[in-house]
Every structure is written in structure tokens, then in C-alpha cells.
Amino acid sequence: MFKFFESIGKYTLLMQKVFSRPEKRSIYYTRIMHEMETLGLNSIGLTAIISIFIGSAVTLQMAITLESPFIPQFMIGYATREVMILEFSSTVLALILAGKVGSNIASEIGTMRITEQIDALEIMGVNSASYLILPKIVATIFFFPFLAIFSMLIGIAGGYGIAEITGIMNPTDYVEGLRYYFYTSEITYSLVKMVFFAFCITSISAYCGYYAKGNSLEVGKASTRAVVISSIAIMICNLVLTQLIRT
Image 1 (cartoon, rainbow, N blue to C red):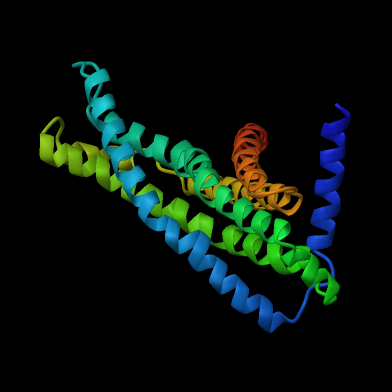
Image 2: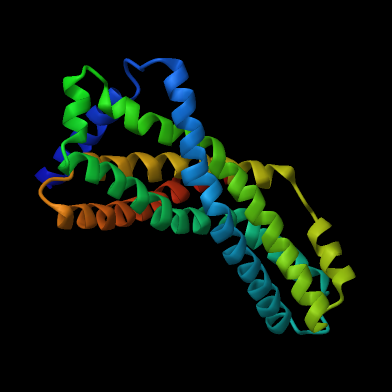
């Protein structure tokens, strides 16, 4: 229990250091653009592949499960839309990105820590926490919501594609279900969650890497720890935000 509160305190102090005394804006702009490419653009392929198959699988499962003369077929499109927008393209996608992006951040910063590059920055008078972590937080907070929107579109398109290819349902009914009781607030809810998830993934992973000690083996442990803790934080955050926003 003492170690838990110690970690919370170190994390809070690190975040205070991250958001204080920033360096030159031009330097931050360059680093933010670089992080958007590394953490955001490089995740588009993974997002597309997973989303299209999940959208297709959900549509197939719904078509098989709801095969009843008393349930209209357009409900399959409606259910696919709700699954993709409300949960998969925010929460599940964030868990996937925690594994890809979170481990990347923790290993990068952890390697810099054990090779004493962070110490060198501190000696030169650079706020190492702000210089290394803040651009990553800004980049993910800005770019991850776009990944969520992209995931929604690809997943829904995957459902339409599987309906067209297999003939398991009428694609026209699928489109009707997509338009059934659609509220833009659902997308807003998903994007708000994604912003919080982006901060959790980036800040927690950076914390695990920043305080890594020892050798390269410890970097691997820090990466694993970053993914596990980020995933737990995402689930807790999802529960709290759903309670606050949807009720």
C-alpha cells in the first residue's frame, strides 16, 4: 500500500514537472509533429485492420443471433453501429493502442534513462520531463480522436462489406439500421473518452519509462508494467466517464 501511494506521488510530481517551464515553442512544434507521425500515423494500419474485421465479425454475429421473424433486420446495422461507436472505437481501441504506443513510449524513455541521456539533458539545464513527455501527450491527445473516428468508419464499412459479400442480410436494411435513432452525442462521448484514454496511456507509459532503473532487462519490465497499468487505468476511466456522461 505504501508503494502504491509512493507511485501516485511520484507520478503527480512528474506531471507537475511536465507541464511547467516549457522550452522554446519552435522546438516543441517540431517534436509534436514528429510524435504525431510516430505514435499516430504509424498506428493507422493496425487500427484499420482490427476495425474492419471487428465490424465484419459483429455484423455476422448479430445476423446469426438475431435471426428471427420478430426482429427486423435493420437492427443488425443499428447494433453494429452502437458497438463500434460506443465501445470498440474508444475503449477497445485504446487498449490496443496501450499495447502498441504505450510500450513504445516506455521503452524509448526507459532506454534514455538507463543510458544516462536524461541525466545529460538535466545537466544542460533542460527540463527533461517536459521536453520528452509533453510533446507525446499533446500528439496523442490530438491524434487519437482521429483514430477513433477512422475506426468507426472502417468498422461500419466492414459490416456493410460482409453483408454485401455473404448475403447474410440486405445491405439496404444495414444502412437503414445505421441511420436508426442516431445521435451525434454518441460520437462526442466516444471522442471525449479517447482524449482521456490518450492522456492515461501516454503519461503512465512515460512515467514507467522515466523511472526505469538498472539494465536493458528493466526496460522490458517497464514496458510490460506500462501496458498493464495503462489498461487498468483505461477501464477505470471508462467506467467513471460513462457514469458521468451517459447518466
